[in-house]
Length: 275
Image (cartoon, rainbow, N blue to C red; front, side, top):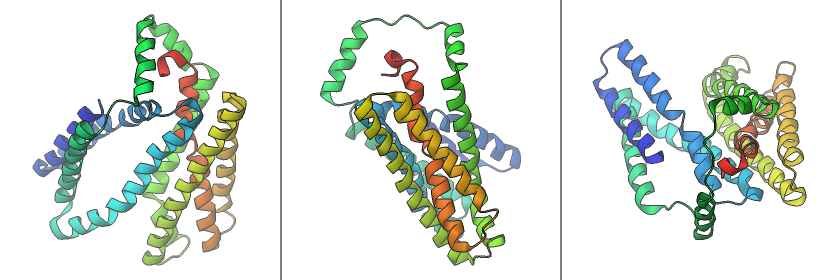
């Protein structure tokens, strides 16, 4: 599935070269978004196969961190491509990167470690009953699943804000120069990755000690998100550039903790199928 998703990204990104009007651009973006959506849950599921429950928070944080770090590395390259060859060439280059990733992933990786594979094979012998749609919907409506989903939704609103409005906010509201803004965005990105990876590791450590998913997962990520919200709100009162950077680092890092820890909470609701 990961390979199929990457191939669709490749086709769509190269297809940008044929776009001649706004409706085609909108259609392209809708299709790309549709095939981007399944990536995260499938990637989390794949990563989980390599790590025991006590390390799944850290494993998922690496998956999330890859997107942040990758964007920081690729951004200046894309800017150069756009400047020299235009935006369509930059999109096509991303399609080429997806194609390279597809071949590397198919030929250089495996499903999971041998011992995990053996455990999975044993579980397959115990046939799972086909889950009914009604039971699945009831599961999604449970307080745990519902509030985890809402936490994810609120966090992705913040993801979009950081992606679209943070540079504008730093320049227009905080009065930073473009150079200072670029450095600040990079600092916020790197520090936030370290923070949510740290929160994930703390969650794993607690789970290893007490084997209690509520205290080690739910309480940890809920506390982190509340603190993140407080730091984010503080910039409305304190406009000092240094404090804004510190608050943004903490707000982004603490709030993003739901992204790696959330899947472990959801999987716990139906453990036999999550594995």
